[in-house]
Length: 222
Image 1 (cartoon, rainbow, N blue to C red):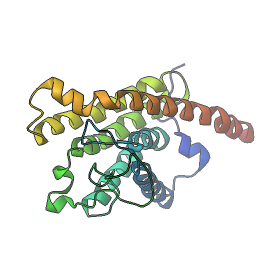
Image 2: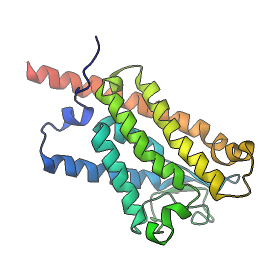
Image 3: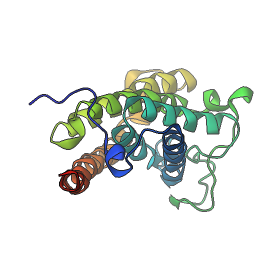
């Protein structure tokens, strides 16, 4: 059976209703969730970009909220960082002396977009890619892809939408990365295993939540 493009997303099962207040609260709340996950960071010696929990939160945001709210939440996240709030992942410099950083002390980038900001970050392209990933994963979730095996495909597509602008910007921003191989070594290879793990977690979390809460909702509606 082909599911309608208007299928409810997980959050609409967990929190019924279509009020503007609800949607605003969800958009803000999930943007802050991404900010928290960004502060879970592992410093790597081979790249200027640490491994963080950001992408897991991004994929879950799109899958849970759907296309428009997911993209809006991630755009708001970008805005938080753009106006100077320390919501982006900490840089290698900020992680000096730390190999693993877990939320506190809060030390994400505090650069503002109006003063270079996101475009001054080597990871700026990845951050912009979050918005596209949230929208596409959300759109596929609205088609029911968040309830079965094809959630893995949706998450993979979302991950690619993060990597493409991320790698292109990294190549532009860091002149020393003057070959495709150097760009991949700096911005792709070190993160593949971690991102596959995050993709796997997200691919289990959404169908699992549907199996639990979706059945509960259906039974209550009978």
